[in-house]
Structures are given as structure tokens and as C-alpha cells.
Length: 526
Image 1 (cartoon, rainbow, N blue to C red):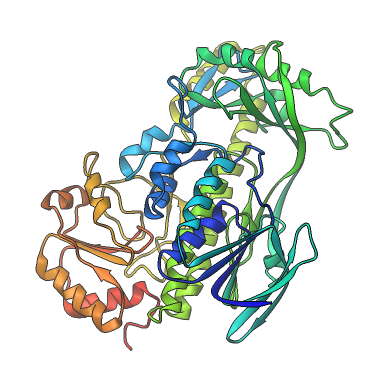
Image 2: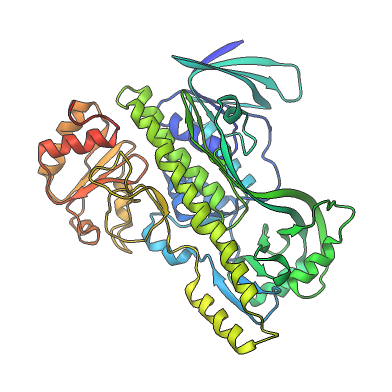
């Protein structure tokens, strides 16, 4: 049996479903092929940023996200770092996402990936243009000048189907079938570490850690582990936990005392029951491109890394928002092939920066600190250095993915990066911020296509005429005069993914054509 769609997505985890919703809401017919009938129960992808909540807002299921796994009173979503053990005297807050909450239109969330996936499955089921085939996976891919053909097989049976589409997207994990079938290579940064993943239950650990209110994940820096974290995270507040730590190669569930490792990391013995013991190799992988002809990759298929700070699932969702509107634009006739190329050109360097400037930088800085400072040898010097870390380390303020220098951002210099700064100024290539700490009403004005926000209706009318001539969907909603003071701009053009395409104070009709044509990957001179 052969079925035809605009886009076929191999892999229906959170990123694949998010992309399907992004496309389906735009009237694009999409088929998602997902091998597991039910979300897998291993807790991961817990820390969802404010930006991710904005995606769910755009996908029509933000309320469902925040109600899917409510945090009880005193639960919190913050993190902390401790020296040698969780119960040591040396701790500081880390990755406190509330520090940047005013710069986004939605609050952050904390819930296990399987709960997030259930929200997305339910939302996808509401959209007529989305077909999801659970219990199937792709095993052969053919690409042609005008489309693709994905052969799929039933996971637990003998059934086979062929899906034809204009484009295929691999959201099928770090061992992506689509990536390999499309011939996309990847670069690996291998840390030569075997990591253990433990899932366990312990009410006693919960009681021990009530001394740290508002915390949901905990890093232990221990000299024995050369800068690699012993990492705890809450699953269900009060009972369930997960834990990552380096272990010797050759370790199995049977030949290693994981209970003793947990006691060492906490700083005392406590009662616990294991639910899962697994292993993974600590490495950072990055695809050399996110596109090969009519094939694209997103999420872990494009990039994977150790669970340092919740970058993985959030980065994957941003892939989906970036790629979705571009695929829709081409399928609807107003986007260019260069617009599709911009997906890789924007997203690939952002993850390269995430890996280099954040994840691997954490490991390097922690290793250097542990090698240099030891309270047993010089307590005063150690405590001075620890205090400096506590005052200078957050992990969120300078994590601000942006597309400066993108070919889609007129008059922009630099290069796309994960490193930036949070500001209420509406800067081209950056995420549109609320208009000041209390200006979140601007988020309600954003449309599904481009949005022109202007203090002067004449500027809005100019962009609308140009958009009509280019056949580009653009809305120019009524804008509050209060927005433009914090933004420091009188005219702000916002892309469908919520990033600022251009901002300024004066714009002629010729300028508007150049700006909008550039923002959709067209030659402004044509």
C-alpha cells in the first residue's frame, strides 16, 4: 500500500510530533512514523525552557503541558551544584531559569519526556492534516528529483507500507536511519566515558534534600571524576529519581555496586529501590549538515550530547519551529530553496556553539577547578574560589541562541550562535522579547506567518503591500504604543518562528521589499 503526503517524518518522539504539529497547523499534510505505540518510560528531557513553552503556546497546547506534570508546593524547578557530595557544606545555585523569565512570553516547565510526549500525541490527534502510524519504522529510503519514498515496516508484525512525500525528515534519534540513508555524515567528540543511568525510588533521599528548597536537579563535583558530573534529577517529587555518573568500562548491572555509588554521591547511606539500570557512551555528535536534497534531520538525529543542562530536547524543539515554517513556505509556493538551506545554516552552528561554549566548557572548567583547588590542602583558597564560582556561574544568562549573520537577516553581521545576551531590545536575528517585564501582551499579537509590529499604521500598510506582491503571509495587528519603548525600535518584523527578521525606525517601500524578500530566501533584486 502506498500513501502520499507533503512531508513524512520518521520518528514520532517529541521533536517529530512538534514538527508535525507545526506543519499540520499550517495545512501541510504530514505522516509521522513512530515505532513505539506508547511513550517510553525512561525519564529524560526534564528541563523545558521558557522558549520551549512558547513553542507549545504556538502549537495550541501550552496549558496542557503545564498541567501534565504539576509541580507540588515546595517542588521547584531550580538546580544546584555541590562539592564532593550533595550533603556537603559547599553548594551554589545553578541553571536557575527564573533569572531570564522576563525575556519570554511563557514560563518554563519541568516534566519527564514521556509526559511531554503524551501532550504532543494528544494535540497531534486533533489536527486533521496529521496521520500518525504508531508501531512502524522506516527501513528504506529512495529520493528523487520531485519527492521521496519511505518504506516502512511494522515493528511487531509483518506489515509493510510505502509512504511517498515531497520531503522526509528524520527525527529518529542519535542512530538515525534517515541520516544514514541520506548520506549525511556527523562529527563525534568522544569523551571516552561510559555513563550509567539509574532510575530509583527513595523517600529518604527526598527528606534529606528538603534542606535545598525549590531544587529539582543536583550536580556533584567530585575530584575522583575529573570534572564529569554525578547528576541527580527528580522525576516525581518526593519519590522517584534518575542519576547519571561515569563508571569503568565493562561495568554491568551485576558487577558494580551502584547503591554504594549513590551513597557516595549523596554523602550518607539512604534507603532506595532500583527501577532501571542502563548505560550510554558520553560523546557529543553533530551532523555536518542538516539537509541532503529532500531529506532533513532534526533533534537527536542532528545532534546529541550528554544531559548537561537540558539542552537536547529544547534544541530539538527549536529545530522543529525553524524547519516547519520553511517547509510550509516552499510547499505553499512562497518560499525558496535557499530558505530550506537556511535551516541547516542557522541551526547547525547554534548547536556547535551549545556543545563548545556550554556543555564541553562546563566539563573543562569543572576539571580545572578540581585540579587546582582542594579544601583539604588549602581551605581558605578553596572557599574563596568556590564563592567566586557561586557568584559568577548560572548557565542561563548567556545562553541565548540567535541567528545573527544569517542570510535571512538583512544587514546583520556575525554568525548564528548559542551564546548571546538577554535584552528587551528587539534585535534582528534574536528571539522577540516581551516589551519589558510586564509587556507579554505583545506575544498575543504574533500570527502564524510574518508579523509586522509598528508604532505607525503607514509602516504596517507598506509592509502589507509588499507582502501581498510577494505572496507572503503577513499580519499587521494593532500594536500598543507601550511596546516600542522597551524594544527601542518603531518597526519590528517577526518571523513565523518568533525571531526578529528586521527592526528599525524608518522603512521605505523599497526597503520593505528588500527586507521581506531576504527574510524568505529570495533575491531582493528579482
